[in-house]
Length: 193
Image (cartoon, rainbow, N blue to C red; front, side, top):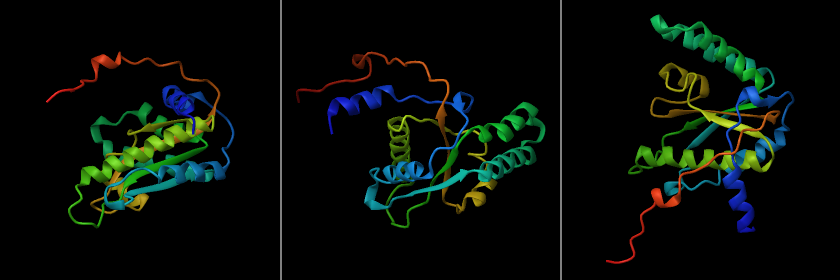
């Protein structure tokens, strides 16, 4: 591994949204490798607390129908037709959508937050892998992420958490370059006792 290549990969990773995707399916073998990379994330006590469900092909329609109808059923007076339509149509622009979840560890003494943090590390591995393959993707915590009734659709139990969805597709419209605040504004060094 050349550190310079890793530095460039991290620096140039961008979120790419469904409206920026080109039509076409990403090879399932690439998606499998991206998920293998995800599972090499650090995790406390080797719990490997992640659970992924991959939607592609007609599965994208099943996902879109599920989330839009659940939203409609649960929204009550806050229902918005444009949000409903977006939940029904946006998934169809992706090649693959991966549901991101934390399966609660059975090992006693491991705080839930550490399982969530491990899954977040796995998601960063997904982001970097998608970028390395020249694909676009983004992690959304929208849709049905925080609707408790959604859990069963993804095979999750009461103590598990749905953490969102990762959309993947070929890039038609690249995202613009990003910028970061100077490191000095975010980092404090302590060099003496």
